[in-house]
Length: 372
Length: 257
Image: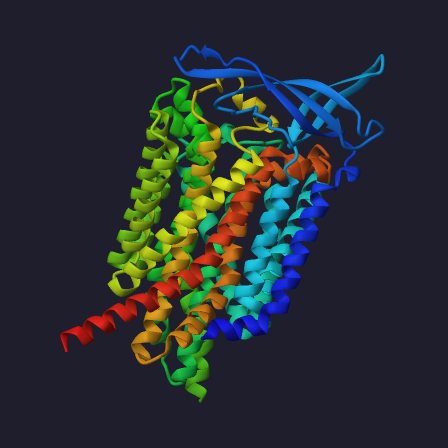
């Protein structure tokens, strides 16, 4: 059975990864000294009576007061105890219930007459992130081997590039936000494709098709939006904006669709490359038609991948809007219009790339076929 | 005409021009998925338990995406069952992780948007975030399952006598080919949407410690990592389903003999 052979080949790696995982978890549960913000552990909890409350839209919720006994975990008060109050609702939109053993951040920590007072400002969540990141690496390395490690490397490099682009954007005071992130998109595409495909003709064809497909899609979309005077797109509903929203939104859309377009382009080029290997005399026309056929089957699922990511994000606030007595149309406009536009623009990019990448690959491999 | 209608029409025309009948059904699947997603919000607003909504909407969206994306039944049926199994496993993982991370609802960064709103709506946001985290991975699961199932089907057509071990190996091999680009698709899909939030963090000089404990950041990264896990797990599960179905077909043939 392949499993036993697999286990023999990999058991050292499995043990090493598990040990690294345990090490990382122990570290993050005991990393309080690296935080400047005061941290404390909940030692005991006393819950009050739940109070029923009703808002003007007849939403019924229950509010509970808790008294928490905390033990300080860092700073000069390490080991000292204090009591704080916390209020939570059963919906928990902005608050949460604490249990013994939870670690919390404190604000306004002061000492008066030898007694500590503070407010709970947040919950320590870094352990969860470390655990999930470990789980991803564990599965990737074990199941996908070298390909998995390369994929992870490409994601990490992209994250680093992302960080620098944001710094540059801030340095330039967002004066050319769209340009900054377009250049970033070029770098992203080049780097990711280089890592996934290696330096080859395949990579050049995929890169060109990705860039051209995305650019044409952005251009077409901007023209359509301008012709319709951006009617129905509520830029003011964009979340966390600290800059002019419109270029930022375009940059978000561009970056959002980039991965999917690369995915599709490299799929098509890889298959056409293989077809050419099997039958070196294949004509350009045949290659183009095969490329279109592959594109047809992958475009639907791919557009849906992005659609689900963009739309699921709007779920929480859309629910809040509905429960606050807004009608469905207004809820859609204020929460989902931007996500919808993003999905549609990405979709246009994904579809436009199919003929482009098929044509590039046909030119690339078709010519070679004639010479041979 | 509103910009959304215009963009939708452009997409429809392009999809039909490039993909013909298949393009039309892809466009239709997008609209149906939107309908079911919106319907899910309405159901939860009417206090239907979010977990029930997640399960039903999840299975429906998977079915729409898979069965409307491809015609080959050998591929789609296997992809559908594989993705339903992955969905169930993921819901368990998401349930655990979200209860642990408590990153539900809104963060401090949302204060402006929440002004004048009543947030005590009587529906547990913890249950809602399980729904949203699950829904955001559905597209990725469906896509990966279809890619693997289609690849294994092709191999089975060419070499019908491969052993289970060889088939498993081929499935994983196809997985290795798609994993790099698929993770990139998800990375960009999620991070593109987070650009504004990251600029906020950088502009206000959030410290590293603050960011990795921030409610919104954590909830988004959980969604990214969960969808990575979803895609990775989909590869062996889909291959196993293909092998299982191959055996069933062979056994049936033996019975007929």
